[in-house]
Amino acid sequence: MQRRDFLAGTALSLALALTTTTAAWAENAKLKIGFVGVTSGPAAAWGISNQRSMEARAAWLNELGGVQIGDTTYDIEIVPFDDQKDPKRAIAGMEKMAQDGIHYVVGPNVDDGAAAVRPVAEQNGIMYFPYAFPKELYTAPASNAILGMVANYQSGPAIYKYLMENNGIKKVAFVAGNESDPLSQRDSGAAAARELGLEVVSDSVTYQMDTTDFTPVLLPVIQTAPDLLVLSGVSPANAPQLIRSARELGYTGLISTETAQDAAVLAEGAGELANGFISVGGASTPELASDTMKEFVQRYTDMFGEYNDESNTKVYALEYIVETLKANPAAIDNVEEFKKTMDTFEAPNPFMVGDAKLTYVGTSSFGQKRQVSVPLVVNEYKDGKFETLFVAQVD
Image (tube, rainbow, N blue to C red; front, side):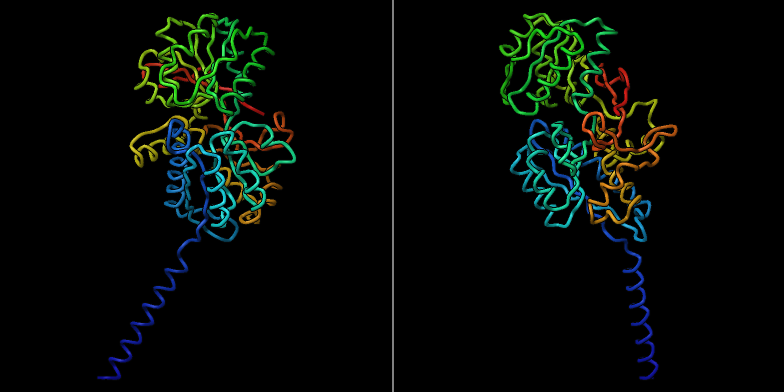
């Protein structure tokens, strides 16, 4: 009896050991992808859209069994860091990513943060995907940053030209927050407008970011009687306040921005006064959206209880990282291999109908491929939602 009990116990122990070992073998490796960006404060919508897009897509890919890169299958783990739109915190966030051995990071969302983290990224072998526009981040000798969206100096001229041809605008005015991002966007926007032959009637008025009464700010701008009022680099929190003030001052012309906005915030802060507001949208429209994009929107909504149109663009960064690593598995921990792959990289675009491809672009703007290829979708706000005004491409 004692011998049988001993043998039975031994067999059970072996079975449990084999089961545990098999489970360990079956568990996928972890691929950590970082996010460093703003998820609090007036510009929070930009970074929240980033983080949620990454988390929704990662959860979906993991549910499908993970992603195979070379001979290894990985589950994707998103590692977020809220930089609070503070360059010093952005640096701390990127340093944390380096300490965690993370080589691929999405963000930051603003110019100052993206510029501030560049030394940390370059010194620690990190490729990062900012949503920031300074050309020096993407032109040689810089090579570690990849623009994750369409820049204002690419979208601005497209918007102005469209409005010239379709609405007959001739005079344009710019107003910007007194920070480097909006001021830079104002300057490049005004230069593009002049190059197109528009008369820039105002481009020197600024406001402090904590302004609550925009009437004295906008009054001198409205008095120049522009056909188009451009809110350069405006945050989702400030946009409805500026729109409301302009309309209450009697301005009846067009209002636009080259930054992405949040329809729910516009509805709450400006209501019908925001109708006709033109902004850069997510990189998809109902006509362009594939079944995968539609399912992504549904999964995102199920996870977070709401959806932000900007996530039509923000979903792409993680996809580009994963697909480029698939194309060259040696890049998993070596960003120099990632860079070698970018010039010839091409993969099916799961989020668009037809035979659209994921490719890197930016040669015209930066002299090298340091930008993801996403459609330039320009929206018009109407009655609580965005409607597509037009779609273009950037090379």
